[in-house]
Length: 200
Image (cartoon, rainbow, N blue to C red; front, side, top):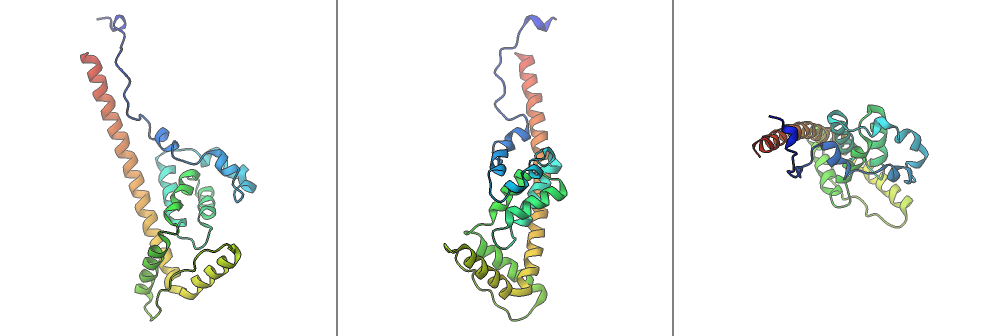
């Protein structure tokens, strides 16, 4: 039978056919990087196409980099994520986005967990103290934050490394598995849609 005589009029499927397209709707754009005062001096490096290429490996690596650097003390999480993205050639926008899980609302429980984790391995009698509140005097607050981190000492430092590594590893695996599941699920939907078109 000549199927060309029967043009398909069925509507296109409404599900996303490509995970790259779905993720790009939520990720920072080139302009966000080039207009950022911290990143503008490095725009030529950070806007390199390899740092914006999106596949399963680069996306999972970007998640891991962002989650790991999200626990860096002070306002240097995104800078650290950008450096990791350049060094390991993973997706820069995802790395930057994933640092945002560490914020003023989550920093205390995250650092408390890190401190207790480090204390578990090192022992001792040190106790956790809440970090200083951010003030209009940025450099004064940064100095107070540095002193707070130093005051918590080795338990916090070791705990941050361990906790960041655990969170990054979990994020990497979840992204790899999730990407594969998305791909398989999308292929199955395409096959079902083709069967429905043939039946009609």
